[in-house]
Amino acid sequence: MRAKKHQEHASGISDADFKRLSEFVHLQCGVKLPPAKRSLLAEMIQDRLRLHGRHSFNEYLDWLLGSGHPTEELIQFVDLATNTETEFFHQADHFEYLVQTVLPELIKITGAGISRDFMIWSAGCATGEEAYTLAMVLQEFADHYPGIPFRAKVLATDISDRVLATANEAIYSAEKVAPISLDMKKKYLLKSRDPNRQLVRVVPELREMVKFRRLNILDNDFGLRERMDIIFCRNRITHFNRPTQEKLINNFCRNLSPGGYLFLGPTESLQHLKVPVVQAAPSIYRMPLTA
Image 1 (tube, rainbow, N blue to C red):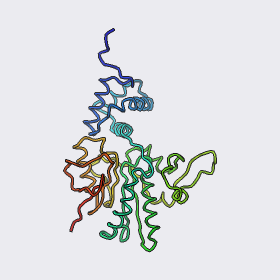
Image 2: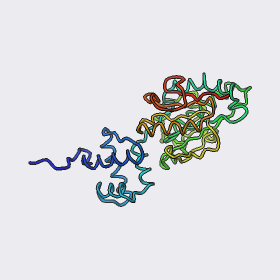
Image 3: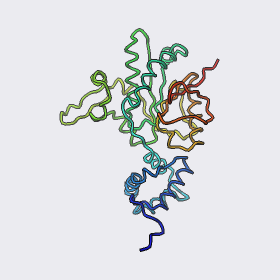
């Protein structure tokens, strides 16, 4: 029997359709769709075509990739295709560096947290674990120095309304909060009143510290009212091609205070990119202080 002209992959997406989809997303958004995620993409597309009343992969792709392609659906598709799950206290060394080096340094040099609110941005916050980890770390720092009137706020953004709704609820399973120390669990998490539900919720004091907002990090203007002292954007830029990475990092830098820090994922590097930040530690970069 002769092979089909368009080889069908085990995922259900033909080679031709996957190539068409990958090339379009790369052209429109600078995002690389890894072949390793092909089966997951197929499952995701099945959900999307049911949601929008489409009857086949081809029909959905023709609609998504056509000349009048729906911008909002394309954004949602790319978000779902590249979404990275977040964890509490993921890369613990980053939070140690934040407490031991960054906070004392910026308080001393710029007065951040004393003369004004210390501003941290969790870009691509997903379901909120990183943002609430930052809130816990900041609150612990403030409690450790009761004589210092330290104030901080966390801005947490994502393009997906779906994950932002989960983040705003601040309800997590016992498995999700396992990386949090017992002392912090007692201090910052409330157990469900239903003993059959192994769920906890972040305390109101921390929820008030974090503001969630929908934002596309590929936008030219983030619309921020003030500059950030720290930006966490970990395990996100790896999804983009080099020109998009350079554009994104430069946009972040325009929204960083002098001396501010940018935290990236452990495998992400700014080597060979034309950006104004310098490396301060592994996967941590800093804006120069200006006179």
